[in-house]
Image (cartoon, rainbow, N blue to C red; front, side):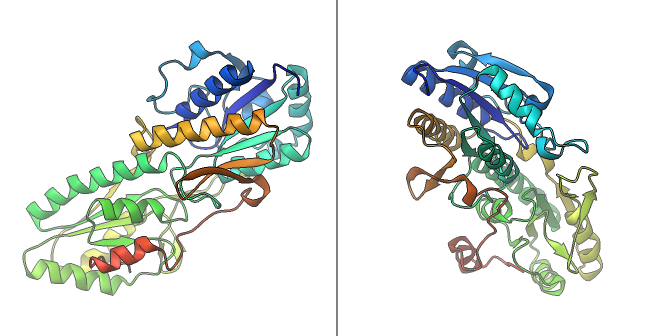
Length: 352
């Protein structure tokens, strides 16, 4: 790589708090460290197909640390290797060479890492940064955006708890998370949920109804936190089927289904709340701002050192990196023996 490298940055997949903090950290660290020229690719990998980029200077990233979303925009469907029925990867690589890009910092989740790894194989040096509110990427203990989502869930549960107690109701809160239960589990613990339902564990409707009746008999309420990927009678509840083969069916509505199933089994009123995209938006928590900054600086260090084909990761208290190929297209469910599950059971939370 020559003395003044040209580095591209993109944010792929869904938006989440902390993306701008990473963009800021990567840009500042590379400009200050090696005088790099930075180009932002707009709307994720779609920008390589649509040929949409913009320069990023230090002034462009000023004041964005606490800003939610991503100044570059994102796209959660465009895989250049199979976009709109065709493979656009060769054209994307031609555009990369036309721009004179030396390396790419790809910020995203499992799908983004999988696409990034394929571009790495085509000869584009890549460093990945793990982003997902679902916290389900392997080889890293924490993804930025997760803490912010958990904070939203905890606040929502705090608010639902007061109305649940006032009316003696069962209140169900449905969180995001796809097929992983991390948001519901940690958010439920933080918000004092009485029952936490996650996709990794089967649950008994009768056991939940019994717990609700027990609480009802003493004039109390029941607060349920459940992940969108929880299966009812072995089936996930799908809100929408997406035609794009690169995307999976969109989950949503399992809370309403549980409400319908539970209501005939209890005497009190059952209500459900779908929290939805509120979990993705807004400013990042202090934890996520710091983690995103650490990730961005470490990604810049990997670029400067020529250590490509790797993803930044948090392991314990240390930021390190792992081979991108070990992460691409994989997910990390909640382990059956995870300490958070033991903490929930130890405090009397119903886990199914």
